[in-house]
Image (cartoon, rainbow, N blue to C red):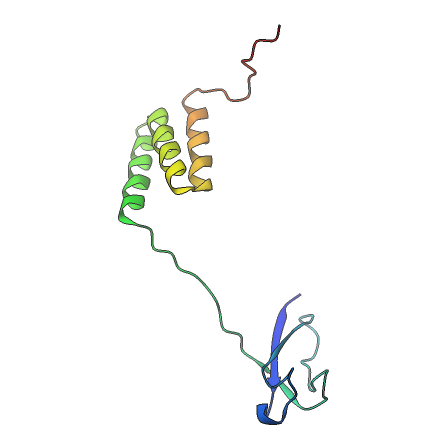
Length: 119
């Protein structure tokens, strides 16, 4: 269900809840609230600001990604896996770690077998 924001139509005349604005979870088909649930004064639905983060990758990250892709395209999966694995440890990038594991598997490494000696 969506979260809608409301504010008093005249903030100077609202209570401590509606003068600053508040959020309300409502179904899409529900009518907007007309009155503050605390003081009963008129309120209006306001447009929420979108909070998004855009992260621009570093030149080092871009070069590493490009080099991994080149190794993969050439079928050098062990090289791609090693580079991705090393870089994922440095950057704590979980997606890159998964990519490294996929490339290790393509290179013929088997992580599913149990290699321990049981005596």
